[in-house]
Length: 437
Image 1 (tube, rainbow, N blue to C red):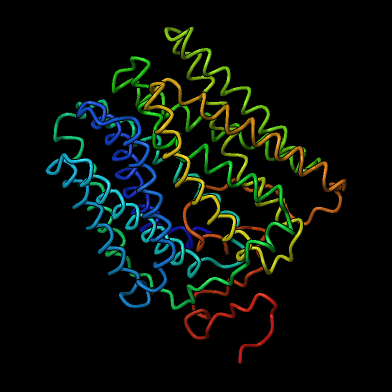
Image 2: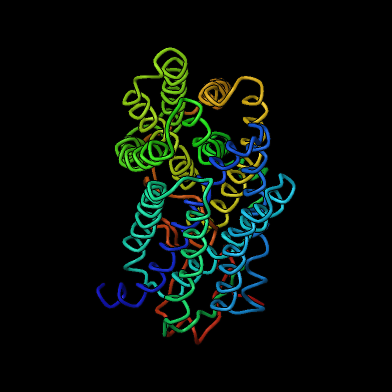
């Protein structure tokens, strides 16, 4: 295990720098946008533009990597992110920001694909669970650390944007310096169409769409929400960091519960609990704004419960498809999550334009209440009780990035041969296990 970790340290170091720069930038844009007088609706569209770029990046990443190679593709996209970060300060125009945000979202998710496909090329089967877990932990910690840079200066100054650009540029160095052999693996994922996904696990489909509709606005608009409550920039940083770290811890006991009882009932219960927490956040925002510790605690529970919905949905899908189809099915769920993340901030921005930033939890409560009704209807229609002893999969905490990390999922049966073997023979992407023609 030690030799494996040493061989991928450069990739994780580059990933950490990339995430810190990108997470810092996401918060900065909202705070700076408020100071520039940009509307709440525009800030929602700005977040949607990022996720549209992410969808395009996930779609075209394989083609770019095949044409440019892993290192050059990562370098190109890191440079795109760094340039975009500086252009936000030079072009204080809503139209320009939307275009730049589209390209930065594209670049970030292409870089995710580079890192994830590289990890797949370096990870033997027996270590995939630990490497997958470490990949998730690195992302959470980097996102929380990034917010602490807000203590250094205010968003109106150039300093923090320069730091974000430096972090994005520095991410190139460990990846370029590594002596790891670039993987020669197929990047085209097998497909699983939407009707088949819905037929296999309709509750999972609903869960991931709702996850995108709630978490997309949270990541994109929570700085606006905190600022509307009178939080300073330093307090916004603490609020987001505690929400992320506390929320990450909460999803594990919730996920383990889904390994014991019917996952669909757990999804329904989690959605109901998240709706209740978001409703409590509405009351705290309007009637108890001075109780900031209460809002932080509620945000931790909200993030933890909301983060658990997606991986429970994936585990529920695993229970109903062959393990050879995990990557294809989970990729379909990831696409649906991305669509939800694209639509959610735009819809939330329209509501906040009329009601103010403090109304963000109200949007969550509305979406989650509707989702509870939909899932309850789906359960009533199915009339099937799932027995825990029949489960093939188990809960695994996941962060939504790109589809190329899915072969590392411990429930995946996709073959991950030793690195030297993978460079010598093509990878079989046939989900049915039949020999390729």
